[in-house]
Amino acid sequence: MRLSKFTWSLTALIAIIYTATLIVTQIESPYHIQAESYRRWRETYIIKQSANRAFVNTSNNRAKPVALSEGQGYGLYITAAAGQHGWAKSRDFDQLLSYYLAHRDYVGNHHQTPTYLMQWRQYQKNGHWASDINSATDGDLFIAMALHQAARVWPKRAGYYRNLERHLTNDILAYEYNPHTRSLTVGDWATSKSKYYRLMRTSDVAPTFFDTFYQSSHDQRWRIVKDGMLDHLVDLSAQHRTGLVPDFAWVTADSTKPVKPWTVASKNDGNYFVNACRVPMMLANSKDPRAQKTLTRMMKLFSQRSYVTAGYTLTGKKLNHHQSASFSAPIFLAASRNRNHGYDNLFSSQKFIFSKPLPKDNYYDATLTTIAAMEGMN
Image (cartoon, rainbow, N blue to C red; front, top):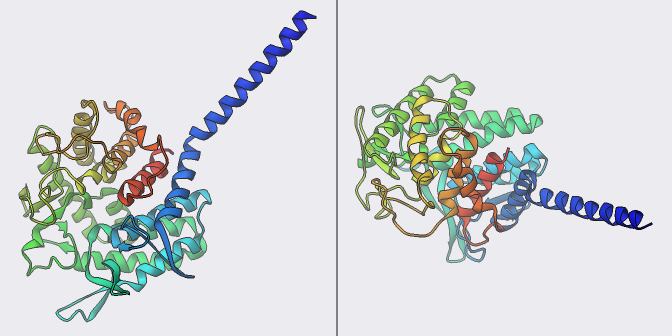
């Protein structure tokens, strides 16, 4: 009889442990992290402007919303990824798409020629919405890639999405490309008459995007862009033993150098900072040897640090002492996509970004973390 009671008690204990294990496993499963990241990101940062239009709020304040083409590109990209799991529907994607289409940029001396590029910023001014002219290439690239993905996720809308992708990628090459440097410019405002015509944003080096656009269009210029921008990035990486690259660089046909402080936006324009932090993410899926070489150099540097801080000089000096998901999420994604390359410890150390709920007051951290969850947890 005692044996029977013991057996039943043991069986019950095992059942409890097994059930608890299943619950913990479910809570911490990649699927759960992905689903929760997307749900929280959408609830926090998507604002519906009307029944058929929505935008990504990048201001971290719903009372004073700001839309950026960068944010809209990320929003479309994340929504297409969520659609693969059935968490988003084509109407969710189309609401974001409608906002983009309503804010297309115009070029020309009098801004008279419409394009499929997106105006870079919208915000409230004196009780009305204002939209700043000029485009930003990083936003346009993500919008185009999202359209390509959406065509695969929602086949019934594929023809429409592919047509928009074709128009947008054609305009990127028409208005955001410098054939002399074989690089994309930072926006349609950086024309041949501008001193910024030779300016390159390192996080615009997106080899897998360029491959996709070439496969869709068969336009040889996408191969030229890929080769030119990867060559420039390799050159930048080789200039310091750390392998780190700056936010922005000056490029010519055969030379590359980091910009000086305050050339574009901040004193850290020439450091590994809030733009360059995306470089590991942009190179993560590329098998091109140049992309792999650049990625491996900087990732091995990070793997040797006790923890990754939010920014570095190109010589590897910390710009501060705190961690940031904006820097760690791209590193986690790159480590996830490139296991057994000598920096697997980063896969574990950078997982801290998923240890707490997605932030509600930091659009950049939340968005890059969501992308890392959607792509790095597969």
